Every structure is written in structure tokens, then in C-alpha cells.
Length: 429
Image (cartoon, rainbow, N blue to C red; front, side, top):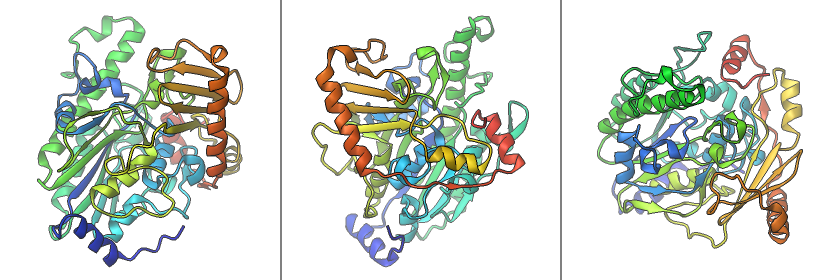
């Protein structure tokens, strides 16, 4: 796929889409490790997220959005290329997106947008992810020590401070595309004084409930500082908010993300605030590969050839849509040779979602089939009762695999600093 794009043609197309007016600013606002049901607008009570709840009330909120892979680098690679990780090469954290694919930020830049990004996690460093492509500025300064060992992240207050500085330095003669990412709900979950939605004594809770309370405190802290950014946005700014993946909080006996494809890892919040988009809720199926085309559509910019996702605001909702998800495991092998070896291997778990049904196919173990409408917690495996459906959904996976050939992810030799940071995030063996 060519990355050569004629900027004047794209800018004309974008302006035409808005009746000759200046296209809007576009904020791609993202959170790490944020389950949809952790927000008040998705049912959490008491709500830890008044600012995101307010944004949701002004937005079209998607109740059924899943990530492509429950890991940060692969998930964002799918969003920004609109190609699943197996097709864009970034199946693991620490593998760069294939240089042969055009990213949404590159198209914004080519259309005349000023593009900038504020990052908050080592996993998304430009050298490791390749997701800096298309950005005029890519701020990846980290100060906070994870587990008290290595400076691998930046907390929400500093992320918002950096974003506000960037906003103030943005040229006024053209629109901007900005990506601002918040890491805070990622483990280790920190209790923030003054951010305790339940009001209960966290230190007297049973261990698992204490973990969940600290997670909610992280969400509340992040929400406070997201609110500061939302308040400062210029009027002509559309906002798309989404998370990279969810988090298992002991469901299925697991704490964390990346090693399975149950919905506690997959289901993420998605909301879009834009002129002409009526606020409300929709159960339209969505997934990560739809984010790039939808962002571009908000600015009237044509998508790149080969982008496989949908513009969720403009493309028709295909009847019986099939969504395929995968994970290749959570860890990044230490040596480049091992990284390439693991990248050429198969997924550890695959999932096929169609309507209310979800089929999980582990590389080792028995298949699982769930009716998500009747059993959203995925506790009753119906695989023995619906052999025909299992066969049909397995066939959908076979077709998807044929349409999405494996791409090579560019392996980067890890420095000692990379190793320490990725190990602190739980991604290095």
C-alpha cells in the first residue's frame, strides 16, 4: 500500500465535506486498561467518572465495542492502521507497525492538519511501536517510576499538563489532530487520596476487593484530569474517546490482560462527540479497526486503501457482522531473535463474535461458546449444545485468516532501559 498522498487533494476533500468551512480539530482521547463497566456511563455505581459521564451524555456512546487484541501496542496499531495486528505486524508489545501501511495520523498530516501526541507509557514509545508516524510532535517524556524501579510512565495530572502546553503551542491557522493517552488504570493500581468513589476504607477490605477499589481510584484520578483537558478544548473540536483494552479483576481466575479473550479484557468504552451526531446510545457492534476510518471521517478525509474497518458514523451497519479478536500472549521476549520467532507463531487464543454469540478457540484446550446476551460474564460454555453454530463460526474465522495474512513486525533490539521499563509493565519475560 502506498503512503504517498497528495496533501492538497485531501485538504480540498476535507473542506468540501464541511461546506467549505475549516475542518474541525480532532481529539483522539484514549485510556489504558479501562473496562467499559468501570465508568458510570456504563453502569459503575457509585460513578468514579463524572467528567467522562458528562462527555458520554454529549456523545454517541457505543455499548458493544471490543479491542482487536488486549495489549496496548497491538490494540493501537489496529486502531491507527485499520488492520488487525496479524496484518499490520504488531502482534506483541515491542513490535513496530509495518512500514507498508498508512496510519490515520499520516493522513491527517497530509491533509494539512497540525498533528501532535502526548504519551504516558513506555510501551508506546516511538522506537518500540512505530506509532509516531504522521505526528509533527510526539511527546514521550516519562517521570513516574513503576513499582518504584524505573521511569516508565506519566500520571494523568502530568499528561493533561503536557497536553495543555501542546494545545497552547498549536498553530492557529490550521486544524489539529491530537492523540492524548492516559496510562493510570494500568497495574500496579495506586490509591489516590481524595479519589475513593465508594468512600469505604480500602485498607480494611478483603485483598481482592481492595485491588478493585484501588483500580476505581485510578479511574477517578484519571477522570479528574481528563476533565481539565476537555474544559480547555477549542469550540470546534470533535472528540473520540476509547480505551485500548479492558482488565480482568479476578474474573476467570485472572488478574491483568493480554493472555485471554474474555470480554473483561476485550470490552472497552467508546464515545464520539461531534456536530451532527446526535447524543445517545447505540448497540451497533464496533471494534478497534473501526477507529481509524471513523477519526478520518470526522474530518472528511478519505481513508487509505486497504483500511478494513468501518466508519461508524457513515458506513452502513453490515447485517450479521463478524468480529474476530486474537491474542498472542502478554509477554515480550527479551531478544530480537525470539521476538521474531514468536511473531511468526500463531495466536494463543482467538475469538469470533457474531450477534449475541461468541466462540473462543484456544491454541491449547477445548473451544468455548457463550451467549453474551444471556451470559455476559461468560460462565456457561454451550459448545456441546450448538455444534452447528460452532462449525459456522469456525468457518468465519477460516475466511478471516485467509483475508488477513501475517505481516512481519519490525523487531527492535531492546536497550537495558527498555528491558527495565517493559519488565515493570509486566511485558518482559
